[in-house]
Image 1 (cartoon, rainbow, N blue to C red):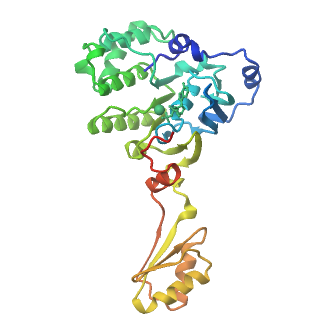
Image 2 (image 1 turned 180 degrees about the horizontal axis):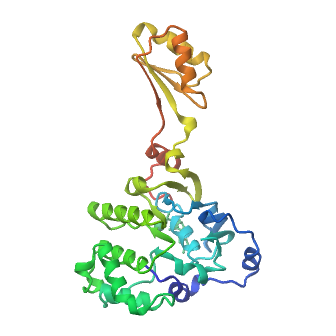
Image 3 (image 1 turned 120 degrees about the horizontal axis):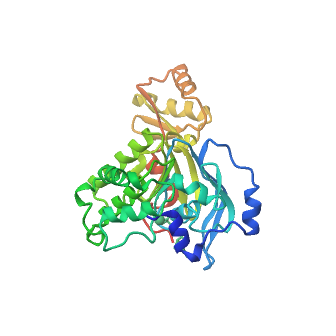
Length: 345
Ligand SMILES: Nc1ncnc2c1ncn2[C@@H]1O[C@H](COP(=O)(O)OP(=O)(O)O)[C@@H](O)[C@H]1O
Ligand SMILES: [Mg+2]
C-alpha cells in the first residue's frame, strides 16, 4: 500500500506532471460520461526499454461495478493501474478517474481513491497500527481526532486487529497485504483500486478478501481489482476486463463476456434420427456440425435456439433434449491469454 500523494512525491522517476503539452491538451479533452468511475482512451505506456507494456487500452469501469482486471503476469495490469493512480506517466492516451483527467487532476481526485499497489510503503520497524497512523498523517483530508477509531475499524475489517501492534517486518506476506487493504480503508472511498490483493494470501485469506470486496461494493464503492488468477476473483465481479500482451482483449459484464457467438447447440436424439438431425442443423446454415453417439451439435452463432427446435421437430426428429452451451469464462480466459498461468513475456 502506498499513500498516493506521498508515492508521487517519493518516486521521481515517474513524477506526475500537469504542465507538459500533452497534459495541457488532455485537460481540455472532453471528459467521458460520469457513469464511469474509471475510463481510458487509448492509454499506452512504452517504457524506455522500448517495451510497450500497455497498448491502446480503453477501460470502461461503470460506477458501482466490481471490475475484475484479469490477465497473466506481465500482461500490463499493474502498469495500467499505476497510470490511473498518477504513479506512471502515460506515453499517450488519456485516463479519467471519477470523472477527472489523470494525472492532471490527480491531486484532487486521489483522496477519493483507496489503493493497494506495490511500491514504497510501510516502515519495517513500526507496528501495523503505527504505519496506518503514518499513512493517515500524510492525508490532509482526514481528521486526526478520529484516527484511533478509523484505524481500529480498518484493522478489524481486514482481520488484523490481533496483530495490530506487531512490527511490520514480522508480518507474513498475507498480513502485509491486509495492512495495505486497511490503509485503503482508513476513510470512505468512492473507488478502490486493488492490485492483486490476494497475492500471498492462503485460501481462507483469499475468501476473506472476496467477502470484503463484496461488502464494500454493497456499500456503493466501485472496486477495480486485478488478478492473474481468474478463479480468485471471478465470483465477486460484475464486470471483467481481460488483458493479454498489453492489450485489453475483452471487456464487459461478467455474464456477457463469454462470446455469445461461440455458443453451441446440442441435441440429444435417438440413434435412428442422428443423421436427420445433423442434416437439419446443416440446412439451417449452422457451421461445425458434429455427431457424438446420440448427440448432434453445431455452432449456434446468432441463430435463435427456438428456430432450431422448430426445424428439428418439423423434420420429425425425436428430440430428447436440446441445450445451448456457452464457453465458460475460464475457457474464454485461456483462449484469449494462452495458458493463463505462464508469464507472457
Ligand atoms: N518500470 C518498468 N520498466 C520496464 N519495463 C517494465 C516496467 N514495469 C513493468 N515493465 C514490463 O511491462 C510489462 C507489463 O508489466 P506489468 O504491468 O507489471 O504486468 P502485470 O501487472 O500484468 O503482471 C512486463 O513485461 C514488465 O516486465
Ligand atoms: Mg502486476
